[in-house]
Image 1 (cartoon, one colour):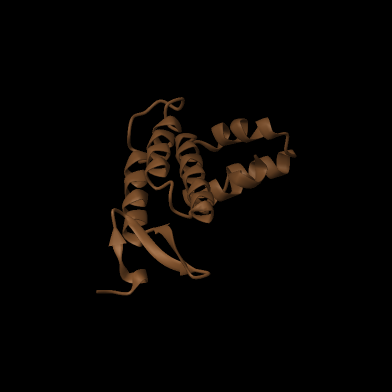
Image 2 (cartoon, rainbow, N blue to C red):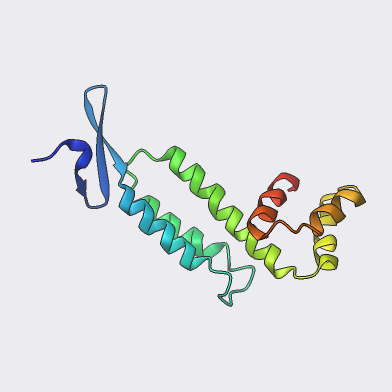
Length: 136
């Protein structure tokens, strides 16, 4: 016997809310999903840019259908942000030169000084992907 919050069954965890037992996605299941998405969205994989967002979309769709009984609205919003940022980081890495980054960022009709500031960012790929979020 164990407390309901300590039980894991078929990837689900359980908790009590207003006297009723509710489903949630277990922490281990979340960790496995995140590791799988890391493998799917690996920058070193040779995948076309048209196909790149479709592969995680298929995986997440199947995962959500499996865990559809669980309460996971906030979880899915956080995972969506994380996956989008990973894909933006992949694109940023593909734009190797500052010249290319300038050309791609200019599409968002920003002032020239802001375009050059973003394109010449030396903060790293993950941080640059976050900055791209605010301009798109």
